[in-house]
Length: 101
Image (cartoon, rainbow, N blue to C red):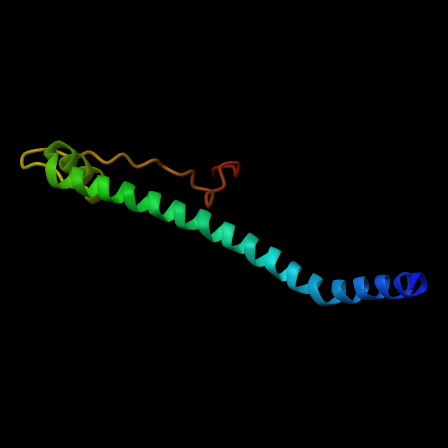
C-alpha cells in the first residue's frame, strides 16, 4: 500500500497540476483585465460627473456661461474692441551677414 501511495500520489498531483494550472493562469489574467476595466469605468464615470456639473453651471450660472463663451468661442460684447497679439517669428530666409553694396 505504501508503494502504491509513493508512486501514484506524485503522478496524480502532476496530472492535476497539468489540468488546472492553465485554467488558473487564464483566470488570473482575466481577473487582472477585469480590475483594469473597473478602473477605466471609474475614470469615465468621474468624467461624466464633471461634465454634468459643467452642464449644470452653464444652464444656471450666466457669468460662467459668459466666461466659457468668451474663452472657447471667442465671443465679445457689442462695443468691445479685441486686440490680438501676434508674435513675430524671426525671418531666416534673409542673410543678415551678407555685405551690402
